[in-house]
Every structure is written in structure tokens, then in C-alpha cells.
Image (cartoon, rainbow, N blue to C red; front, side):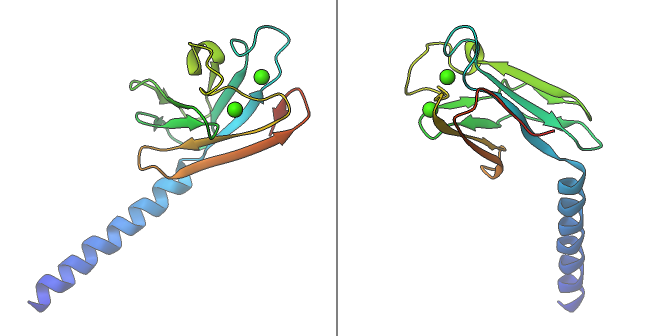
Length: 134
Ligand SMILES: [Ca+2]
Ligand SMILES: [Ca+2]
């Protein structure tokens, strides 16, 4: 029994270590938002997702939300290290519903969730045409 407990402890410890390393290498952020585009609303709105980590991240099952609408990223979306994914309103709100992901020009928030429903990034704004982080 004791040996089993030790083995289980080792397995749990290595899982924890793996998760820690995984999170450290996988740094994904919402890096640019254009909520008040010069063109069409909401078609030309932009949400850009950047991978600043050292390895590719599978975005299968990841979601964007503005608190009203939600958009699930396409299931085959891989984001390589150092690359970014630019999504427009044509993708995240193709039906142009105001209750969809429709980015208010005054104040709104965008949240990025992974497939475990954890918040990866959370970004709010007020009164500026475009916001950028880096
Ligand atoms: Ca807008
Ligand atoms: Ca909104």
C-alpha cells in the first residue's frame, strides 16, 4: 500500500510539473482589438490573438466572449510560436447580431477562454478606436 501511495504521489507531482512547464511555455494573449473600425460594423472589427510562447498551441475548443455573445475558434486552429491569428467580425459575428460578439465603440470587454474554460486573457476598454498591447 505504501509503495502505491508513493507511486501515486510521484505521478501527481510530475503532472503538476508538466502543467507548470506547459503554462510557462504557452503564453497566449489577445494582443490587438479594433472595436471601432473605419469600415463596416461589426464586419471589420478585429480581435488578434498572439502566441508569445516558445511552442505551438492548439486552440481547439477555445472561445472568445464579450459578455453577450460567444465565438468558438475553428477546431483545426493551431497557433505556432511567435505567430498571431487575426479574426474579423465576419468570422466572430457573421450574422451581425448585437447580442453576438459585437464590440461596442464606447466600452466593452473581450475574454479568451481555453478548452478547460479557464480565462486566458481579459481585456476591457473605453473610448479609443483601437487598442494594442505590444
Ligand atoms: Ca464596434
Ligand atoms: Ca458587446
